[in-house]
Length: 272
Image (cartoon, rainbow, N blue to C red; front, side, top):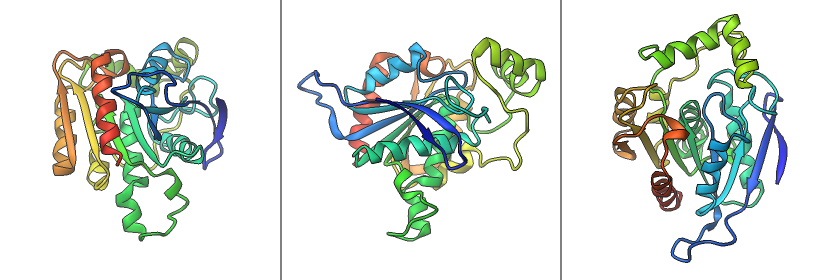
């Protein structure tokens, strides 16, 4: 099933729903009430092969919602590189619940990894408790998440410590870079700087509890070195779990099938 969702700020989000696998390994049946909502990395979109591979892996464990962030693929708007994208994820999670799924696990990669952390801080069980049990909080109850997996995410903003991140900052901040983004990568990037600067991932993590949190990172990530996941894990404390993967690089392309299977198993157990 494919449709366009509308975010709270009026952006159209191209979204795809895949029900749990009809044919599956009997030792690992999909959970009919669990949906995975996948948040792709920067310059990805719902039709990219690496995003479809992730969806095919998780459909063995439950239903899967994939979508293109604003400014990516057929979605409207322009990319804000992780800021307003929280609204895109919230729309996708709410759609999964409207389709009848009582449990939702969000799984994000790179930029999407930072988005699932901030989304969980704003829409998770902890925020619901702070707003008051049983009360609606700006319509966020429907968009809440039950488990969070952040893969290859940054811990802090404006990081330029690696060559790939210096190239990315050129792409985002320079007019000629944004032209390359639009015509070379199919990504329309907003020209305005953040104002205000959004809550950083490491600031968001302590607010996620008690929602279960898994942080996954490769020890050969060329974008964000291991101090990023270590900062996130420290901020999470006892409620977070860190998997530092030997030999793994960055994000979707580096996530092996075995790792995706382990994440699927973790999410089925963690989402309650």
